[in-house]
Length: 533
Image (cartoon, rainbow, N blue to C red; front, top):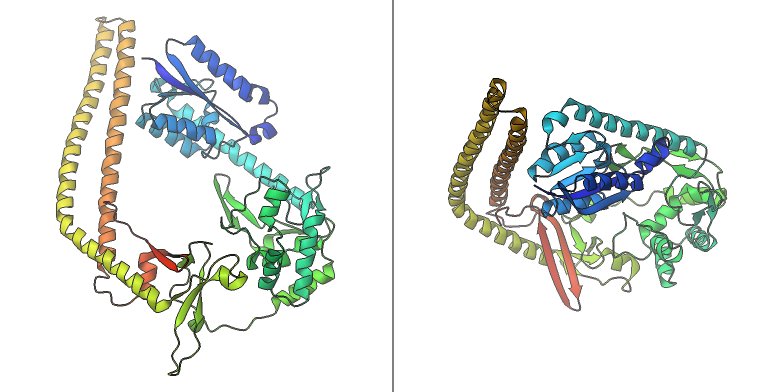
């Protein structure tokens, strides 16, 4: 059998920074030379399909462009063999890498070879054992150790007053002479000064945002992308929000960096192998005073902080919160719909209307009103919930049939599992017999090696089939469980008569309103979907 092969090379920044003694041998070019030389030497066994390279990417994440492209080639059955220089190239996180080697590759009938670690999944007795687990454990430990050292180095830099971020805060840029030093960006700094001046003059944050938008001044994200030509992505920004907002103004007014003080370590990753960021308690922030030239004099900055801390009037929460809070959004700008109470009518009653918060705060230039009364929205939501319940009642009639069908399917698949288990036992029995034949001199060692190679390949194939079948049964069982949960949840509301907060929280994920001219459309995204669809 000739294997269609993908060669995978990876080099991370951590390797470069922490392993200068062996960086030459681990370079991308040397990895390629080693791998290409190997398949050229074994051209009767391997046929090159493609070379996949991730340069400067850590082995602790599996979200790598070339790696993902290679795995897609595996799923598309374009390659059935992967060769790397060593186990650490495929990944340094022990659990995920073991899962990849011992489950994912086997499941998709992929032969995996790590040359310098003498690992070949086609010969598991030789290479798949304690040594592999130990090597992966050491790779994992290496990453934990490097992460600890990097954090310590970063903390030392922060405490020295060095800036360690990827991008400077709006109003500043990194010094060309020293990337850890901030210098003022005059154009953006003028906007920052204007924001502070307007606020000190009594202008509100929304008024300031409106003024900047009216003057066509790009917001910080657009400024960095289009004026400074940075490869900058603001993960907290809605895609359609390309203008100044209340929250942007508030962040600038609250940021101590504009007074010349460095404020860092406001967030951190949970762990070296968990890249999700968490907020750090304010008491643990790293704040170093007078590290760079201020845009706002300290006295003026402190004056603004006092103004920001003035208590606003207490809102009547019962009157101002809506049952749709956190659930109702404008489709066009992506921001929430605000609740407004009408003026009292002659009988003293009032009704609730929702309007787009962008329109309400920043005007019709940035979004339209999207106005809808709460009672009108209630009617639409109620009708949709009733339709969903009606559909669930129809589905309930089919539940018995689906359960019967599931039982038949599991019986059939269990029979297949029994058959495959028997084949697996037969392969093991044959090997014992062949070992006896070898001991008795009936067959030669060459005959046994040939048989053993084929037998082990057959065993691997059967084991992969068993795992695939077990996974299928597991997924089907989950699908039935999900169906029953969906059914039972909806049937709880078969006698629904009104829309309450409880109904919305239990059933609805989000509600969107879109507006084109006089036409409005409501889109309701339910939390639960029929898994049988």
